[in-house]
Image 1 (cartoon, rainbow, N blue to C red):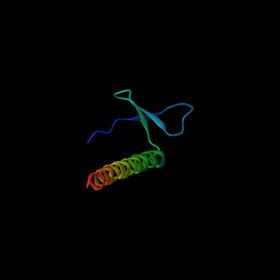
Image 2 (cartoon, rainbow, N blue to C red):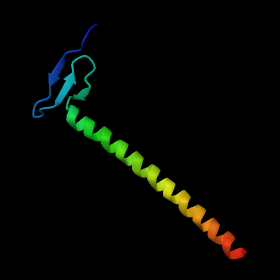
Image 3 (cartoon, helix red, strand yellow):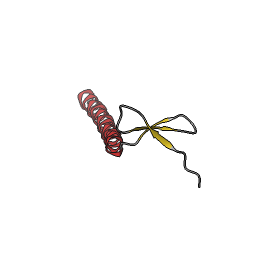
Amino acid sequence: MYRNKMIKVEGYSNLYRDEKTGAIVNCDSTTYNQYVNSLDIQEFKNEELNNMKKDIEEIKNLLKDFLTK
């Protein structure tokens, strides 16, 4: 398997340029893991918010039913 040569980007400790494609690659796994974790946390918060909205809608409907009887 051929591996492209990575050239260190001057002034940055975690950035490398792929010699073949010219792409800049961030090799800082700690920052990447923090980013992925933040996405998981945001997804959890969104799910919780959606569940709360559904619960509130259900409570509203129950109150409407109760008041009409």
